[in-house]
Image (cartoon, rainbow over all chains, first blue to last red; front, side):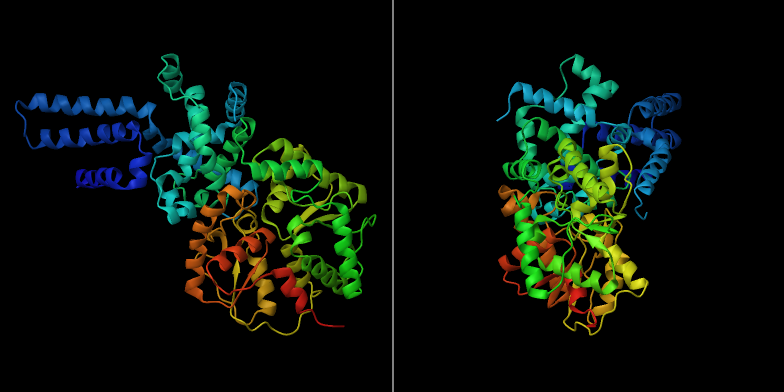
Length: 99
Length: 421
């Protein structure tokens, strides 16, 4: 299900004129490294590749890849979002604008 | 047009504009494209280049190559995309002709990026690298040298004052030491809509307000904010502050002009680096205070079907949203709201210096289709607004589309319905 949703998002990004125009290689890279653990996990769980340890290995490798990429890309914003929201809110509040 | 030196100056100016929030904004953007749908220049042209976040590309390139790890590595290897004269020349039209700094994009950004402030920052780089449009360069030069972007001198103001005094028998006080309020005017009001000055005189007389104009600081318009030059903006704000301090007034009244309010109310103290010894109120805020304290007595209602066009800088960026509605409640019996009214209202298309930039005339009229669509839904006979620039831009757009809808200023509407004593 998650994979279908992600595929739909990718297709949207590839077809919508504004999104296609704005997207950078990082956006696609992030999509890929988020998608791979799901895909390899699905394959490993359903024993679709033999031998099983190889499938599991691929899965672990893809998760590790995600964790490495996490720190250096936009995915990090999943955590820093809260900080950013607080900051922007405080800035706007100081200007006296209703939030 | 530009020399290698001016390009270097431009890049440097952009570098100086990058602060912590800007860096955070760039690293937060997920390229979702939602800001495109919030921008009238995108919705009316369908051209993805007008996506608000794309307009800040020059600033983004400087941020990437100067402040990020990957960008620095790429720059060392010569793989980065530098800011070039061609880039700035191409972006000039996106930054100045295709953006009114209306701030609607900042409202919809899901990660909270203040895109319109970022575009304002790019303008600093454009000015430094000689890429600002002629119309705005002329206006800001006149503002600094003559004292008004439209070249209005004190004599012209005095002439209008004499006319009004002769017509109405009212007195327009000038340079009254120790008055409570000092009123500012925009050039457009002095030239095109002197009714505003007359309205102030009438309303203040009835309410018993002690007020004055200043012969040294009558101009509210701040071309420095529009062109994107903090140096010019600072000088123009300083003029008003000096004028108000000299007359020792308690309040300065920002007129029916959008970015004048942004300049004097919000950006001003930051520009001059200190707080004011007086308070700044927008005319609509003051009128609403008078209404609350019972000093604004009106009679009769304006029965034509009408709507209020919220000026971006006063409502979205300034927070003066409830006041015009309270005031209209006094005098308008047949008032309807447009869709997206209030803080999500669409810009008239001529703010942020676009109307002073002749090159942008065509795209401004294209962008006006958005306002036309809003108006077609409500089918009104009259429009009310509170910004002389919006008013002029609306009048032009309506005329171009053969729509017979007069546009009036809210202060004027109120003064027309004052109870005669």
